[in-house]
Image 1 (cartoon, rainbow, N blue to C red):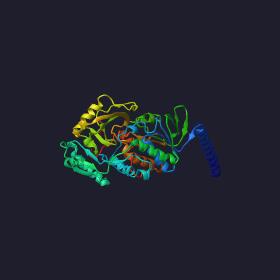
Image 2 (cartoon, helix red, strand yellow; image 1 turned 90 degrees about the vertical axis):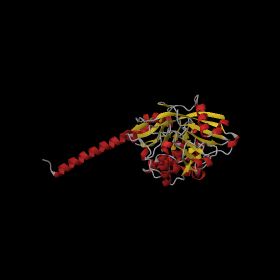
Image 3 (cartoon, rainbow, N blue to C red; image 1 turned 90 degrees about the horizontal axis):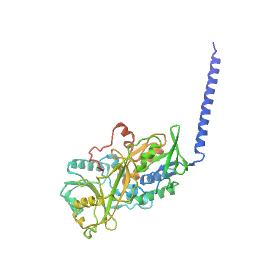
Image 4 (tube, rainbow, N blue to C red; image 1 turned 120 degrees about the vertical axis):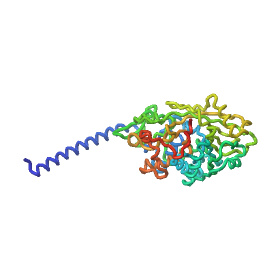
Length: 428
């Protein structure tokens, strides 16, 4: 039988052996990690995708002292952002989304002070028209927006007729009106955010397609781009738009994201409409439209947008038949547009989710985050999304807006996001 001192000696020796084994294991892990990053360029964080969301995230991470690297497979703002219609409005039927848009609006109307450069924000006023069966929902959502502090009014069809004398207003009773809203230039906004981020130490590499994400012990440690170049970082954020699913699969995540194709056209307004008109979402005719400089009007349709499993390259061209459908719709709401002429038509793609809401937050290995799935309505909320996600990444909690409702887990739980007073899905 061992004495107490012998037992203590045996336990101490055993403990020492365990500590040596743990230390050896830690040393071995460190050696492996050093070997992995030995030929890699070390950065604070890697953002995959240089659209408006990648640029916003780079800007806000840089504001928090990080020096992120943004890797873009093509060029800055060359995909969904470059083809975005640029509406700036707060009207959503989901409160967290309206709150993101409201917080982002502060950026748009004070862009030069907050970001620097310009974003092309133009105040036109915004009108939301819904189908008659959603009138009660519209009223409830206007009340919700007013509770959040959003400058929005419930107006009659007669009020809309006075705001926009050329509009046909005989198919609805009330509409929502945001007098301060309008549109901005998505490409200019992305460039300004990226430039401001670079001035604080961020970097942008274009023509740098990420082909692999490296992990170790359940953590991301870097990425590899086409051509073999490697970067080491403890943070990787997937902001790759229609390609977000491809990027996520590199760490074993299957995102519920498909590629959604959308088209717009520009028409030259007739001389009688030289003063322009408000920005409008018109659910009755499944379209939206806004004025553009040079006497133009942009028109997009909410239906007939193809959805594919694979990413679709933005070609800049609209499909046959789109222009005819769009012309017919805009002439229903503005009969005077029969005197308009076609300027151009184009098409681009974005990532779309089953509930047509973004996916934000951590997923998979430690250090991997999602900022994708904006489903064609992400531009106007980008500044607030970037700020909130940067807070979550760096500080551990989003302060500007709680973005936890947009987590990937909602799909696993079968709890898709839907407004309390929902309209039908935008993209049919």
